[in-house]
Image (cartoon, rainbow, N blue to C red; front, side, top):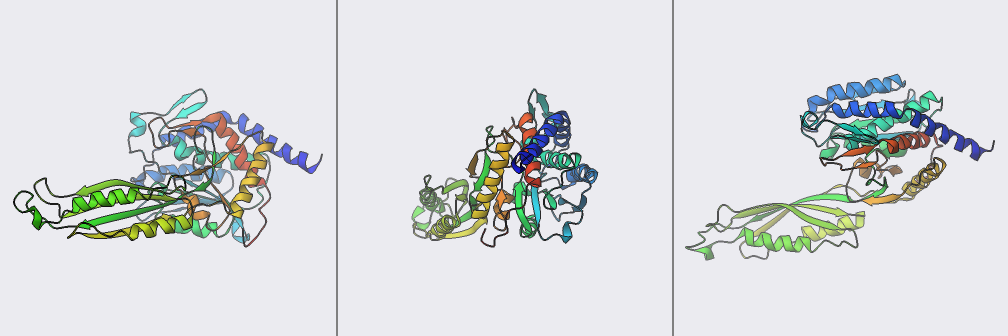
Length: 396
């Protein structure tokens, strides 16, 4: 048997194992969905992380639960002896969901043929189930991962990872490659090979109050200035270049018969590259008030850098496509307008994102996971963890 045939045989073993454990995969995902973990309820993560830690322990991994200050903290699991290794491969997931406590009782998860529908199933308990079963496949088939595996599961990704981000960056600096198990893009299952930078700006306008009927000329309308600012901000959107600016929330004035003394706008900004992010940020900060008597203050900036198609990211994606071909999977990549922990990890190591479950409806009432596709993604992740490390290159 040639080396190529041997490699294909390994991938086929993994795929056969995943399909043979399809019912176990379904049952495990259902149990995780039934354990609710809203970001804003830190106490709910105890039972969930206990369950997940038990799964990792059964696979021989060491685990640690790190409590949060204002969040549910995080769970980490790693291959024994990983501290003696020069490099690791990092698997990132999050346990928190956007669904309020009680959603599972009001809208219980449901399995229909090839679909499991339920709150948090796609984003991203499907990806966490995938990680457990990929490691289980390697264990059952006596296949050793090419590099020590380190898994990090956070509880604050849906609010921008304020507590887990420093640890993610620390681990990414030690990683040969990073797999982020966010859901794939759309029911086609496209893998996210690039993500936009995400920024948040607050525009505050100070005017001067006056009676709108008796002496409006004595006032300076913050609302009038807000209208101008909104128009100027939206003009910065350039769909062709991938830059978007959206004024999503505004507040202004006291009452209809008072010239508005204040106004505020919350602004979401997305950009595909660092250069584009810096350029649009400079444009926003350069805005000046044009309504006489008003003053403009702009705060904020970009909190997530872009995940760009660097040389290392492209090499990792090519490897994954090759493994997909051996598994009989046609894999497509795409750029996502959303952000994740992959944005931060990719600044320090080759990273692939949207590597989790296939389905649709993330953050929506019809959220679902395709179960047959999840089995395929289990085999794909296992094959990636088994595959030889990427070449070490300081310029990757």
